[in-house]
Image 1 (spheres, rainbow, N blue to C red):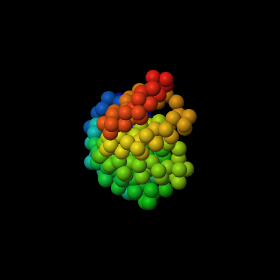
Image 2: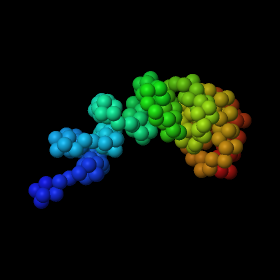
Image 3: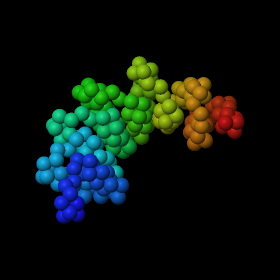
Image 4: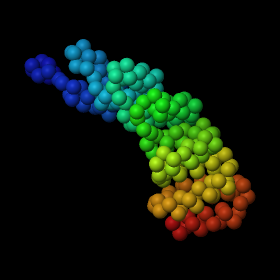
Length: 217
């Protein structure tokens, strides 16, 4: 419609349109716009590729997202932390922790992008879903060395992984660390997760203590 009026869409226009296609979950239109801008001689920038990967994430199409990422790298463009976080999230949410860690390794060793706390939260939660409490704990314990502080989402993911696997002692230790950290608004669901883990392990005193903490929170 813009072209019919003699107004040529520019890079910003296409980036906005691709993002709009994401909001209505129309991946085909997003790719149509992507190819159209290249045909018009408008090279995509990092934002274009990131928006397109976001469209793929919304549609649940990891393979397409990975192809877009490879094209982005081939074009000599630098991916941002959010780009890697989206890719890692797509596989981690299905419990494919090994593939998520492979992407994380690429992010750490083959790019200049520094993982942030969101990256670690995504990975730890992926390990929880993949029943890998040891790996979840290892990632959690790496945070201080990376200059990162765990937030509520981090604690929720690692505690979920430990409680799910029955590692009650370590879970209790980290839960105390959370309470001493100054992080506020711990949800009742997290108290319940820890309480149930204590109950399954017949740690009744700890279970009652967690219940009291929950009632006072």
